[in-house]
Image 1 (cartoon, helix red, strand yellow):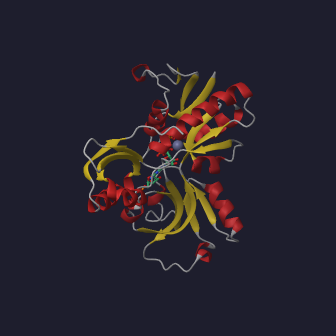
Image 2 (image 1 turned 120 degrees about the vertical axis):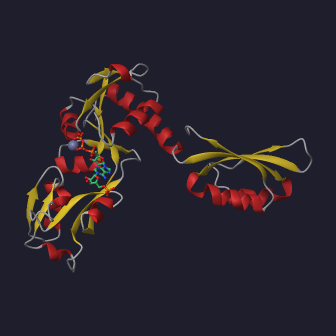
Length: 283
Ligand code: PRT
Ligand code: ZN
């Protein structure tokens, strides 16, 4: 049976569970144990601290894992990165007190830098010819400069709010990360077949995220223009209406451009516009 490791709690737990659920892999939450068999798909879910997921997958104690790419890069265990999962986006950046003048990477020569990602930072400094003192600390890295423990920090940034509230400014973005699906190198064919099936389901779920289903009525004379406005998967579905010279269109639109698309369609005569939630796109 294929075993997949995910974070027990923390930032990636909820979205990992949701991705699995949307992909048809569900467990009985109320009876949660550290290892659980899915009800409807041949996998077991192993709940771990995110720090332990790369090693567990590398050793083969779990076949797959969902973890931030930052952990994979830091831990250095041999795993296959099978798929980016589109959530948990962040970056690991160098940040310094905002009162300091920053004049490029050489600023860090001879400086003390606090981080929970010493290996990623060491590699980056080596590649860029910087010699600095790297202090490995776990916990609240962002308070180290104010506490006099370090001159700068190398830490995860997402909105940037934590840096601002600690009087720090981001000066170099070193590693971009998101949640990834990792696998044990050399999984056997039987397990790989289940893994492929799961990845294809993940793909459908990920493709549907941020998309809406749009239905509208339109004068036939405006059809060509509407087709040029709408970014359809193949091309929009067009159905004639009982009312002469009118048609109905259906298509999928990216949420980011939903309102601007609706406004353009209204401008060319579209009416009765319906926006519906879209669950999955299976190609
Ligand atoms: O208990 P366990 O060891 O499993 O969890 P953890 O406490 O080590 O990790 P957790 O749950 O905090 O984060 C899990 C993963 O989420 C990380 O490894 C990243 O891949 C991803 N992620 C995405 C983040 C963030 N965004 C994030 N903003 N992880 C941490 N942060 C922290 C960051 O450390 C900093 O303190 O949030 C702060 C910065 O956030 P902003 O928004 O203020 O910039
Ligand atoms: Zn952790």
